[in-house]
Length: 114
Image (cartoon, rainbow, N blue to C red):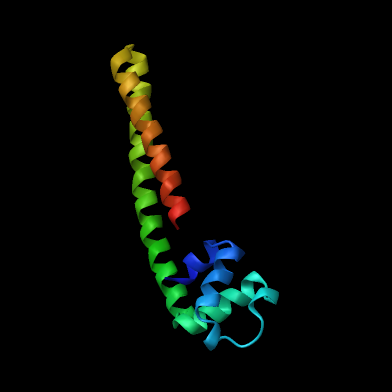
């Protein structure tokens, strides 16, 4: 489990997780707020903040590189689509439009993953 997973959890699940380790946690679990629970669980589970930040940076860099190449490919397909429109090739336009739509979705997914 990572910090990112803890942040995505609702507070009720965080409390349940904290109750599993209640002997290692000082204070009342039910009075803690979400950010306090996350800090406590990170300490108990041995998750280090620096590691979480380092892996997030590496993942983001990788996604940005992938995003750039996807955008270049999309732009090339858009140029091809323009040429196909001039040639009045309906089948080619249809295929390119679908491919562009697919690439746009892939770019959005890559950005959300970061």
